[in-house]
Structure formats: structure tokens, C-alpha cells
Amino acid sequence: MKILVTMKRVPDPTQKVKVTKEGHIDLTGASYIPNTFDEYALETALRLLENGESNTRQAGSEIVLVSLGPDDAGKEIRNGLAMGADRAIHVVTTDAEIDALVVAKVLQGVIEAEKPDVVVMGKQAVDGDSNLVGQMLAGKLGWPQATFAASVELADGGKAAVVGREVDGGVEYKKVNLPAVITVDLRIIAPHAVKNGVTPATFAYAGEGARLPSLKGIMAAKKKPLASKKLADFGAEPKPLIKELGVVLPPPRAAGQIVADIPTLVKKLADEAKAL
Amino acid sequence: MGNVLALCEFHGDALKQSALSNLAFARAAAKEHGGDVVALLVGAGSAAAGANAAKYAGKVVTIDDPKLEHYLAETYAPIVARLAKEHGATVVTATATSLGKDLVPRVAALLDAGVASDIKSIAAKTQFVRPILAGNAYSTVDIGTPIVCVTVRQSEFEPAAELGAAGAVSTAAAGDIDSLGATFVKIDAQKSDRPELTDAKVVVSGGRGMKTGENFKVLEQLADLLGAAMGASRAATDAGMVPADWQVGQTGKIVAPSLYFAVAISGAIQHLAGMKGSKTIVAINKNKDEPIFQVADYGVVMEWEKAIPELITEIKKLKAAR
Ligand SMILES: Cc1cc2nc3c(=O)[nH]c(=O)nc-3n(C[C@H](O)[C@H](O)[C@H](O)COP(=O)(O)OP(=O)(O)OC[C@H]3O[C@@H](n4cnc5c(N)ncnc54)[C@H](O)[C@@H]3O)c2cc1C
Ligand SMILES: Nc1ncnc2c1ncn2[C@@H]1O[C@H](COP(=O)(O)O)[C@@H](O)[C@H]1O
Image (tube, rainbow over all chains, first blue to last red; front, side, top):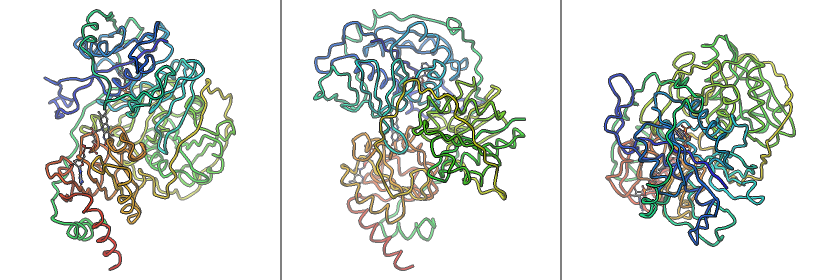
């Protein structure tokens, strides 16, 4: 099975948000991380293709990592290779040149060339919080989609997947024939969330996030192929039609107060805040 | 000139509360675009909700087909895209529910349209304001495609009020339905008499410090006393203490009730992103240095084990005295 995983690098969310004089996000000196949901997507792909207990990858399986981003995004891509992706495609561009439409178009081009059995992506990039690209891509490809996946189980001998989707009212189970686009939610990294019929059902993945690269993985990543491409290679132009005009910081909340005890709290909620 | 196609979710014979926020936006967009609001109800049973929808929109179209018993993006998207063209829509909009978020970008792909997702306001005809970076900045985006797709953050739009006269209801055929092999298997849903998290006037949320799902019972008592919905932090949902759809935050549900209780929640930016818009925030936490106290209007530094039973008693007393 061949899986394509997408990865965007995002500014480290723990940094304080600053705005430039021109009214855009100030990223001077910012540090970056791989979008957490994309790390989870890669973790999902690895779990789909390995025996988690014996820690061995299925023969003939492949994970291709794709990222659109600036030149210096190589670090986050290498991190994905070190986690276990087999090779990567880096479409070199800048944030100002792309939007969800451009990203979806480029990914469509990559997929038409690579012909993966399934595309696994994050549900949302935590910088723009858009939650768009996976669904747009599936629509463009005419593929089924299973978004907000909290669990994935391969079915029909690997020709389909049953995906547990986190929806407003609970968890919806949807079966999609492959190829399909799957976007993952937070719970996908739960101990038993991914079932591939190979990892014993008794085996529980540990850890609170995606796996960290091992030393061996880091060494191996240096030799893995990383192809550098341009938007034009996929027929895309650096002309975003979703344009950011400017950003502002939200108004701060007025300072609150610490109250001494519960009777005081209830009194203030009733009389002052008129909330009870 | 263009019309606004507003996809409205319904339940039984009435629109869901979430749809009314979408219609409020749709009216504002229709003004900018010089057109009409067309409310679109898709799915088996939608015809029954048409009359209710007509209280809020001048035109209502229902597409009621037994083959649309379960929502699937694969079957709904081509229908919405087709209706957008048939009705000369320059705006296609839905509330940013899990359905809206799943469907609208797929519709946009079929229409070659750009999307402004999870918007908080409309700034001009094709310009929208949306929170980014976990709500730590508001970005104004301009969508340069002929058709504009939008999902609307429910908490930012007051529900649309009823119109003076009822609108016209018509039906349309679903056309060919091809699910591309996708099938609905089942839904694991928790039945609850509490209000929906995104509609509730009061929300009681618990975090990792609650330690077990069993311990949430006392929070549920508080919630029921207040007619509140239950919420939680990611840590509590991830640990399986409570269902995942209780998660409030950047990547969960966005709520803005009049009163929000954060109990044993530290106040990570991702959590704050989902509740900062609440009118009054109460934090109950044993550690006075937690960031949750920076957004709380009222903070109590106390263990929940002591605080919550006392809070229930005091609120009961207050209610009895009224
Ligand atoms: C990509 C991504 C997306 C995320 N999205 C979300 C999201 O949408 N929503 C969300 O909530 N989080 C989200 N998170 C997680 C977030 O970063 C925090 O990890 C999470 O919110 C912490 O939950 P918590 O406050 O319950 O746990 P903790 O941070 O562990 O806090 C527990 C709190 O309980 C208090 N406490 C302990 N015992 C008691 C007691 N007996 N009485 C009173 N207080 C007590 C402690 O003082 C502490 O403040 C996301 C993270 C990532 C990486
Ligand atoms: N520049 C990019 N490069 C690679 N993947 C991307 C990029 N932008 C978005 N994606 C993918 O699309 C998902 C959803 O992103 P978004 O629609 O921007 O919230 C992300 O989790 C990524 O997997």
C-alpha cells in the first residue's frame, strides 16, 4: 500500500502573536513546527503500514510526504522522513503565493503522478485554522472523503477503510473505498485507533502524540530522497484568490477578580454579572 | 447581483438553532450582493421542515429523497453545487458545524470557488473576518472567485429573527445520486436532554484535574441545575473521561455562552480559543498561577472536590430565595 501524507509547517503556537506595521502577522525570528495534525497523519500512515508490535514495516509499502512551503521548511520535512516517511516532495513556495485552492491543485497534480492508495492529511493547519484542503482535494479528485478521523480500520482486504469520524453528535462510522482522502482529528493517536489487520489487536500504542524520530531514523532520513519542485511543475500559478487583506489583534478581555469563597462567587454572579 | 444559497440543517420539522445563525449571515450577504436568500434543505425528511424554514427566508428549496437518508459529502456536494448554479448564487454558505465544515469545501471544489471558513463577520461583499492562530488574531480575507463559499461561526451571529411574511417553498429533485462507494455505517451518539453545546446559555466544562469520568457526575449535577451543556478540555476527552464531542477549543467546538465554568482546566491557548467569547467566565482551579485565571471574570482558587458541591448548595439556596 502506498500512502501520501501532507505536511505544512506552522509557526510554533506557543509564541506570542505580533502584527507588523503593514497589518500582517509578524514572523520575524519565529520558530516553526510541523502542523500537529499532520504529524498525527504521518503517525496514522505508519500505523496503517506496520506491525506495531514487532515494529516492522510491511514489505512494498511506501509513504510519500508532500509539503508546500518556503526553502527553509526542509527541517520539518526531514523530521517527517526521520519519523518513517520514505521520501518527500517539497514544493518550494511562500505563504503569500498560495491559498487552499493552490495547495489543493498542486496536491491533485502530485497525486495524479504518484497514484497513492490513500491520502492521509491533518484536518486543519493550526496557523490559518482553515480546515479546507482535504475536502477540496477530495472534491477535485472525485474521491470519497472521511474527515475528522478518530479511528481508521482497513476493510475488504485493504480496498476500503471504515473511519470513525468525530461529528457534532458523537462518532459517525463511514466506509470509504480506496483511494480516498482521510483527514485526522486528535483522537487518531489513541492506543487502538488505527487497525490494519496486521498489528495484533492486543497491542496498544503508547505516548501522548506522534512518535519521535529515533536516532536511527534521523540518520536514515539524511539519505532519503527529497525532491524539490515548483508550483509550475503541477500547473499551478502563484496567484492566490483567497487573499489576506490584514490582521488585527482581538480586543483583550477586561481583568477579572479572584474571589475568596463560593458564597461570594454566587453572590457576584447573581448581583454583579447578572449571570445566575 | 447574486443570490445567497444558505444550506440549513434541520431536525424533524424545524431548522436547527445553528441554521438561524447562518441565515443571519445570509441576509447580510444578500444585501451586499443585491440578491435574495435561498434556504436549501437537503436530506430525507427535509420537506417537513420547509414551512419552518419559510419563516426565515423568502425562498426555500427542499430536496427530499429517501436515498439521502444519511448525510454523505459525496452525495450532498454535487446537489448543493448544482443548486448554486440554478439559483444564480454568488454566495454559498453553511454554519461551521461538523457537517458544514465537511461539506462546504467539497462544494467549493466543484464550483472552483474560494472559501472563507469559520467567519466571524462580513466586512464587504467578498471580504470576511475570520479568527486565525487559535483566535489570537482576526484576519480579513478577500475571496476573488466568482462564487464565494462561506462557513459561519455560530457563536458570532445572533440567530435570524422570523420575517413578517412566510417565504415560498419549492422542491427540487435530487438528480443522480452517486456516493462514490462511500456508505454510512452507524453513529455512536450519546442521548442527552441537555442543550447542544453550541446553543447553550450556560456551559460547564471539566478538565484533566477531574481525574475520572465518574467525577464528571458532580459537574453534570451543576449543569442540570443551571440548564447548562457539558464541555471539556482536550485532556479530559483524550483520556476518555467524556465523549470527544464535548471538547471545547480551537479544534473542537467554539462556544460563547453567557456563563462558562472552567473547572480543573489550566487554560491552554487551544482551549481559550473555544470559549474566550463567553460573556462571563468562571474558573475553578487549585493552582492560582494557571493561565485560565487571566481570562476568567471570576476565579476561585480551590479544589473542585470542595468547590462544586458547595456551589451546587449555594445556587440551590439562591434559587429557593427567589
Ligand atoms: C493541535 C492541538 C489542538 C488542540 N486543541 C485543543 C482544543 O480544541 N481544546 C482543548 O481544550 N485543548 C486542545 N489542545 C490541548 C491543549 O494544548 C491542552 O493540552 C489541554 O487544553 C489541557 O487540558 P486541561 O487544562 O484539562 O489539562 P491540564 O493542562 O493538565 O490542566 C489540568 C488542570 O487541573 C487543575 N487541577 C488538578 N486537580 C485539581 C483539583 N482537584 N481541583 C481543581 N483543579 C485541579 C490543575 O491545576 C490544572 O490547571 C490542543 C493541543 C494541540 C497540540
Ligand atoms: N502548504 C501546505 N503543504 C502541505 N500540506 C498542506 C499545506 N497547507 C495545508 N496542507 C494540508 O491540508 C491540511 C488542512 O489544512 P487547512 O485547510 O489549511 O487547515 C493540513 O493539515 C495539511 O495536511
